[in-house]
Image (cartoon, rainbow, N blue to C red; front, side, top):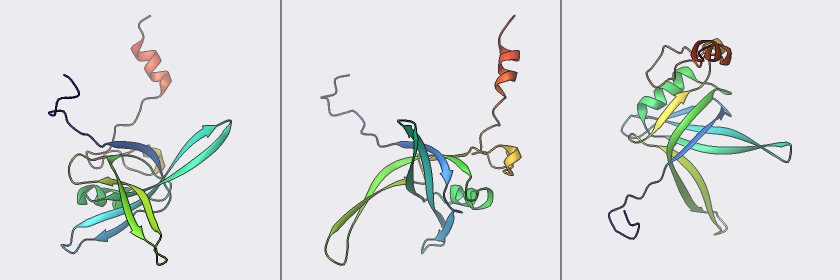
Length: 146
């Protein structure tokens, strides 16, 4: 398909894996549905030094917010997939500010808990959780024919 045609989709999706910087902050909308505010840290190594980047996430999906409230805490590792959005506002001095946020809407969003069972997060809880990863030794022993 030629990209100059007008029938192609425009797509906004972001995925991060990181650790919660604080316990999820659960709030309620005026209609009484839960939503969550998260601060998520991701790391990368640049020239041998670790850099931490902080991401503000707003979870509008009440089911995901309830799972976060029940099964996560500060330090929990999560995979979040949503859309990147920008919030604009003006300071009291009239200066315009822009902040990037990751929003997990009710549709087209995903959350997976990445902590293992030994970290205190039950892996048999809601369906949004991944299965525990096998140890690399188990994979090598079981999957490679001799």
